[in-house]
Length: 209
Image (tube, rainbow, N blue to C red; front, side, top):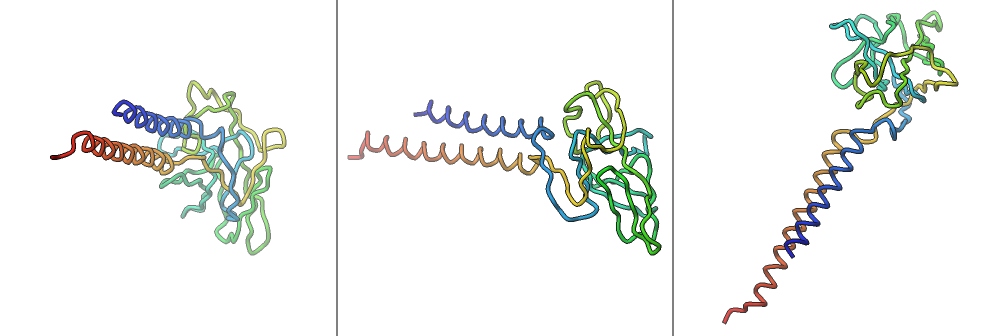
């Protein structure tokens, strides 16, 4: 009985670890684009990456995260968790802008009191590797695996942009933690029930006189 208990518990924990590792190591392979209807959400329907600037280090970083935000200096940024990163090349949004339109080919138009004006265009980065970064929704630095970028506008060949939608990884940290916790809970419940059954059998085998 003890061998069976240990075997099943190990199996449950192994399944949880495999599921978590699969989510963590291959987020781009099965990521999904979700419609939000928020004009400040932009998804890449292709293999490119948004280019953002690390102002402190003066280097370009790359992300699939398309959550746009205009800062106090009217610079268009991408928000990644608690930090905002200026889009590269830089795009300045007029102070009287009421809405931003992002066309599928990356052109950004500002709605102002005098009409619509093109204020810039997204330049996406492309890499030779299918999955150049382990965490594509973070702000990544080019590495040996990714190689050097090739930057160009979105296109039919490489994939368009989709405004009002956001791409999300299939598993975030909460999902991974929940999966692992459920497996551990199941293994604990099984261990508890196994101990109870073992105790009942022991009582039946050695009844009190």
